[in-house]
Amino acid sequence: MMRLAHILDGLRCSGCGALDVLWLDPVRGLVECHECGEKATVIVDGLDLVDALDGCGGDW
Image (tube, rainbow, N blue to C red):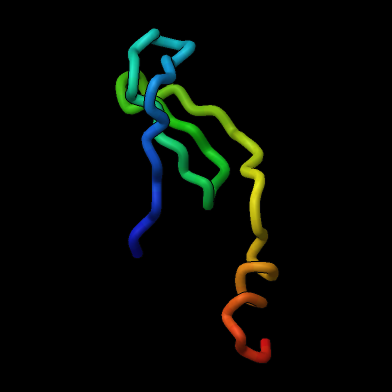
């Protein structure tokens, strides 16, 4: 199973201060620093699973 993660350009880790090492995992609602391993939970604004499935045109 492949997980989609997005790098957060231009942001620094508050733990180690490294630049461009933060990754957002919107499925788990988690931001992780790939330098020091610091993690933070986040609320991802956008469509939830039911809204995403409605746009597929299928009868769920």
